[in-house]
Image 1 (cartoon, rainbow, N blue to C red):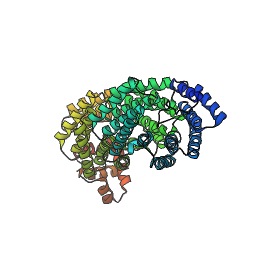
Image 2 (image 1 turned 120 degrees about the vertical axis):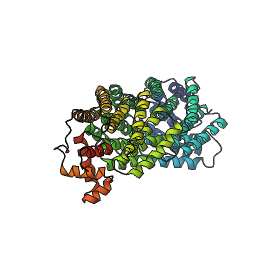
Image 3 (image 1 turned 120 degrees about the horizontal axis):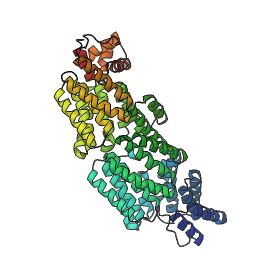
Image 4 (image 1 turned 90 degrees about the vertical axis):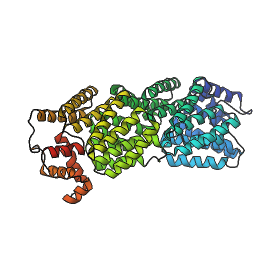
Length: 563
């Protein structure tokens, strides 16, 4: 076999039986191919037979057998003085250890071995497959997209020189995704579309790589928040993965379809897709299971099932997605400092050049820093978010930046700017089909309007409640209902001059300091408490008052003459 990934091309010395095995694989008869290659291994134990067996077992999702066969092929190629072929096995062993076992250190070791073996060899397709495999795995998104794009361009150059059509298309796809990650969306999507068009036209020699091209296109659509397009490609990839009975790829497409449906408000569909993804990853590619669990935790958070979300996040600990969802859960509970820590943990996983992967973390960090009274930190996060949103300018990204900016404006007393920001966010989220986020922005707007425009505030709260109840978003719906009830009492003239009796003296004291403009850290020093204790008192006060932000709490404190 020649090249880094073209399983259907063989050297002149390969037997007819070996050719028959690759032909069976190409036509989707993996069991037949496995039997043919296994017979050849028993007959002559050649490196070529072991390599063929590794591809057949990979197609059947048998990770242990794949690794065993590749290791045997690697050793035999080394003994035969075939460093390029040995490097080919080394780089694919890296991918196998990552996909099937999550063994990052061992994967990196095999990649290093492949680099050393190829260092002094004449140009071969393997020189291009190596950079592709370096940016293709469970932690690939955490690499600098500029480095990924450079590696992909090198792969394309090698593919052109060596005539490896599969390598060329994969290189184009990986370069496209890297450009999108860096914020060069138009150029990146053009390359991804090119790769997808070539795949659908049947240009690939190895059908398995179609799944990779489709997967990268789905990732890109998700990152620019083009959910309709992402859903279409999820369906395409799912059909292909189902035909090939490739369980790992089935899990990937279902996981991403579930995330798309969560954003679009089809929570029943998201539940089914994500649960199916977890089942797929239980059977194959278990390292990818944690990200699916984190996406399921995000669904639970939106549903208001925060305890269930926390349990799922415990299983997904260590993944960037889990840190992001943890930050959102903490923010829902009014735990500003914890939310800041989790958001920053997420952002540390991605370099600043990974613009599209940072936007969600920046949006959460802005809000969390506002909740924690860390205004300068909120301003820094918002500045970076605004820069990305202006550059990419999709509806969802503009909405995120507008809502985050409004939260900061409300906290710093710029009421009109906050009102306009929340209104713009509602409109943009609605146009993007993101109903939950639109309803959440309505709750924020209602809290802002409650002090001086109670009728308008009541209408916004009522609209949010209807949408949230229809979706089953119980936690946020309860807060919106508490806010509406408070506004209704005020309109009837029933507002008390004092804080509700259920509010403790310590909670009242903390709110006085919030209204005076102190950060949680400053309040902790002033009251001789830990910052975590201040967070907890503030969170409990939010729940009892039916508000979800420092700005709303401070406004209510003023309204009730606490300061």
